[in-house]
Image (cartoon, rainbow, N blue to C red):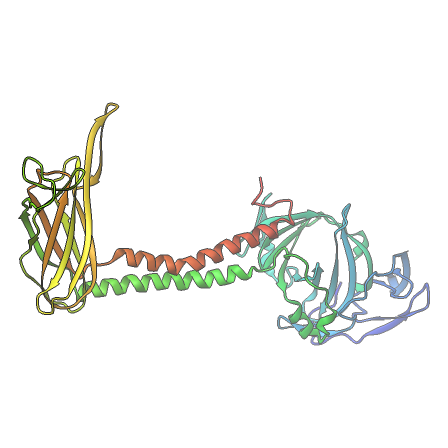
Length: 446
């Protein structure tokens, strides 16, 4: 059993390999029960009386560890010493990875696992007592109120190793279920008892700094790690908070402006309209001037004067008429009676209805609104130039409101605020789909 609850690392001891007589250093001599000779590959067990017995021969390691055995470092606030290096594979597959066994004199072992350049610091319940309460189903696992999703199922096999440890790793091939909730992972190893291990994605730069190792020696990252945190998820979380906050601020400002400058009704009147006749233009039997096929011009008229008292303001002009299966169009000119400055807009209304196929139908409206922005304070009237397809029209209704809330502009502003977060959300989802391509349990595929 690894030596724990100490104030410092034990004093290393050496012994000679019983097979090749190579000197082997043990960094935890009292706690180590097995070791592997880096020279001849002998897998050695210490029996009663600390006698070293060769259990079997193993293939030599294929790659030199980037963190040497015996190297000390401070990672995640804990002091570690590297005491073993293992090369592993998934049984009946080609997938391989490396593990560095880290020894801490207070809590025992932790593991640095690296697969395709992606590193995880993995600990047991000695480090995370809450692992005793971890639970899992067939698809998910729960730990500390975080839900993890199944990513992989495999049986690990140790193919080569150097260093020392306190259990027979060559005989240890537990069926493993790996669950992820980036940047964390939970692994359940079947056995008696079942054990849970908790891992956290760790950047190579942090590990290299912790153990004072040249970062250029570390393997390059390939693809997306199983629990590698998504950069898009981090930016999305920040952006969505900013966007929602901005939308709230925008709506509050609209409310404040609406309270300080409330809507005012400046004009609300009905007007009789009369036909006009122009020389040189065709007229029908009623004397109405016909501008084109089915188009009748009416006599222009002026509305009564009204005050716009609120400085620069948006005005909403609403034109209405009782059109019936027909249309009416009006050119409206707003005139400043002091400066003669004008603003011109044209708007049409139409309303049609009928009965067809046993059902009543209708389309269009009998009124239409138009907005004039940034109208200065002053006295105004409207010049109205109406035309219609119905010569029987006799009246129009005109209303004007100031300080209206331009909801279209507000909606466009809200869309602009959330557009980039939506784009980041799309990139985040695409990133997750690419992550789960490496799993047989992807939630993105049936």
